[in-house]
Image (cartoon, rainbow, N blue to C red):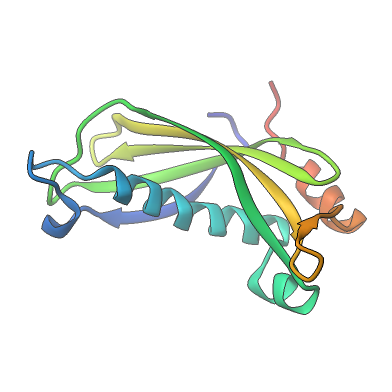
Length: 140
């Protein structure tokens, strides 16, 4: 990940996050990545207040996860995130989860869609939000 990355989540793995094999269950990877998503969105202006005040929402329409290393109860994790692409109505970003020793545990790439919650369909981002977010898009 490049300079544009930001720490968007820090946390620990608890015993209740683990499955019958003893490692963190996939639902918790998704949950921790989701928390990181909201921190990333806040950074570009997609805040809870913005969404409420403008009858807007965000919907994940495509997500790919690569599991690289098991996480166990007691492990600490950090997620760094970067914007990859931004278009009129959609945003693509990547999260990288690392364990306490810095090893990559999982990576996900998500495509999100900006929606009008009243009309229940996609709609454009406001120009000022697009401008702010484009300044944060990772350089290839």
